[in-house]
Image 1 (cartoon, helix red, strand yellow):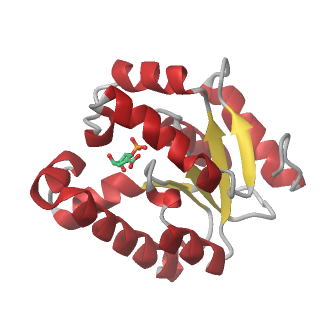
Image 2 (cartoon, rainbow, N blue to C red; image 1 turned 90 degrees about the horizontal axis):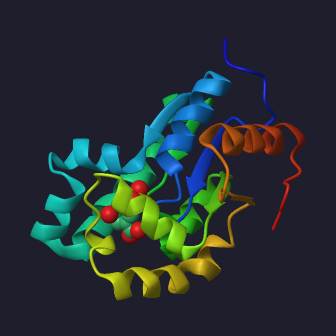
Length: 183
Ligand code: S3P
């Protein structure tokens, strides 16, 4: 049975390589909630991979599909509770998406890590990330997005922590409503 928790739906925010998917899956399993990865949802809806969407429609086309998938998810009453969502690295950087999340009363948790660590994790994993292909672009995007990421409800550092450590920290934050590093 799903755990009684004051917060019933959580959105994980953070740059590429932050661990949103791994932590999201582990957190959902720990809480007995459902897990949804926004990128996978977009791929199912569009019938194409993220890389294919970027190649065919550019970043603008991807952002449109991403915003629509997020709006539909937020309006889906069957997914209003007991749900952990891993957003894409750019989702929360888009003002319209942040507004929609805020209007929905969403609790957002930023998974934080230094740039070099994020780069290392992205190259160690087989996901094709069109915006991680260029070294300089990756660094510029990281800098550019920091102010937006800091608007998340809570922030958890993932550096030198296992997926289990991060998951336990988020569980604690959600239970107490007090973050180890509340913004
Ligand atoms: C993106 C991050 C990716 C994916 C897309 C764009 C970004 O998700 O949504 O490639 O703009 O940072 P992950 O953060 O899960 O890699």
